[in-house]
Length: 408
Ligand code: NAP
Image (cartoon, rainbow, N blue to C red):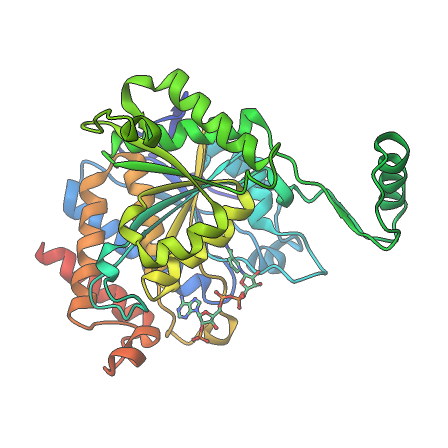
């Protein structure tokens, strides 16, 4: 079904390191709802930044693959086999949002891609952009990156309705084997956390902190209550930090005993509920947040709200061999096809993708152009309505970013 570019090459991976050719093939999925408008705008902006930064010496060879509604229309399948083959071959994808119905219908294609490529870390940078209306007094203090474990915990989906055979069997097993009484009207979900999965994301977060000169990693957990899952997550994170990165890490406890933090990444941990109030009242104390799946999901949105507009955030799903880059928001169906949606989230995802590729000069151009556009109040309707200015359309906002990149 797909015509692969003849003059592009695959991105390769070696123990988590990306080996990027000068003309890498990168896949994109337009997505549902507002997806096609924002994704095509993002690709135009990314191409401009790459061209400006590297002239003709580097170029992304985009290859569209189908998923979601577009795939269903073309092939009768929301996640066709040919698309899966391309994802397994090329392993890096910029993805528009895809619709997933609640409590019925098809399974999430987003989750299927994450599992297929084993993209175990969901990484979400949250940094204030001057000009946005934030609920905080000093939003410029917000500069956090959340590393959320993506494959473990309660979201593994090991769940059974209260009246199922499985739930009944589990209740009986617990009663008979462990003398644990559970009421007969109880649904069951199982929380699982593995040492291997905890430690691989810890490694990724620490390596990132060292390479990007970040100052601190905070492990977010509820280990006081859930000792052998969340408590173990904390313990395993410290273990990998101290066994494998000793020269780069100093713990908060060691600092309290007089050790210097000069040139080191500080490692500490905080109890999850406490963190929700702390990131609001003392955002400057948080830098990299390392969290298990459920905590990470919740804190990501709370942190996103601190900058005032979650539509401005991009995220990455990263594994040892691949990455999927996407906006945080969904398909916003009421705005589909109207040229009013804000494409910044997926453009930011593209910026993150360029950083992961090591194409930092192009990424910088994108970051700067967004900052300038917002300062100049050249924004889409979701922000214009707070600024009291006339809104740009999705395409026109993209044109504006491209013009700004030209002047940089
Ligand atoms: P949503 O699509 O993010 O939209 C919720 C609201 O957020 C919109 O009505 C709009 O708010 C605002 N919004 C979101 N993105 C915007 C943008 N780019 N520009 C301007 N405004 C934007 O969330 P949802 O309604 O809960 O989810 C809809 C569908 O998206 C669901 O099927 C869900 O499964 C899917 N989804 C997919 C992903 C993904 O692919 N990763 C992620 C999340 C959700 P106002 O009404 O205030 O203008």
